[in-house]
Amino acid sequence: MPIRCALFDFDGTLADSFAAITSSTNHVRTCYGLQPLTQAEVSKYVGYGLANLMADLAPGAPVDEAVARYREHHARVMVSETRLMPGVADALPELARRGVLMGVCSNKRVEFTRELVRALGLSAYFACVLGPDDVGQRPKPDPAMLLEGLKRLEVSAGETVYVGDMIVDVQTARAASVPVWIVSSDGSGEFAPVDGVAPDRVLRSVAALPDLLTASR
Image (cartoon, rainbow, N blue to C red):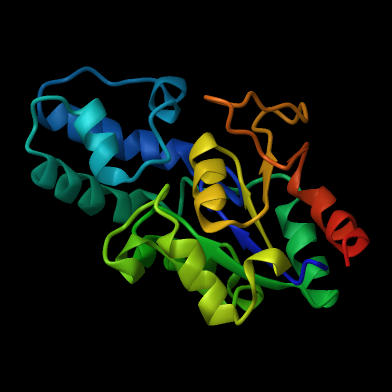
């Protein structure tokens, strides 16, 4: 079946937001007397939602309080410390020109994702930007966000591909019965499956999407 729609993860797929995530995580850690972590250390825990991130990286802190501290700080730094991933600025307008429907499904708080999409100049390309807030606080790997994206864009799972960068994106897409393509974080075109869960395709860059999707139509 031809692919008509691409749903995207945000952090690590469309935008390099790890500097901002690390900054806000270390702000929270400082509040509880913990030493700062490097971006490489923080990035290992990103992907399963903010509550899980705080539980893992602010041990001993009340999770709800840590989440609130993180969000208060993140609102101040997220725009200045977030950049587009390589290839995104050219790929999205080309996908739009070729008639591909697009949306975002991210575990980030949806008001943050929508603000970043606007600030990065991407708003015109997405028919929907979704977060756990839109589906009863059910973050990935729950498939609820992807299923809501299919509903809003009026496409079937077989007409859609989910593009992400982490194993949680593979798990989510599999649960939604949506094909999944992974952009390798180091540009190698390689991605190690976890517990036998592997993507359908691994890309070196988002820049490859227009031609690959056109070839599938």
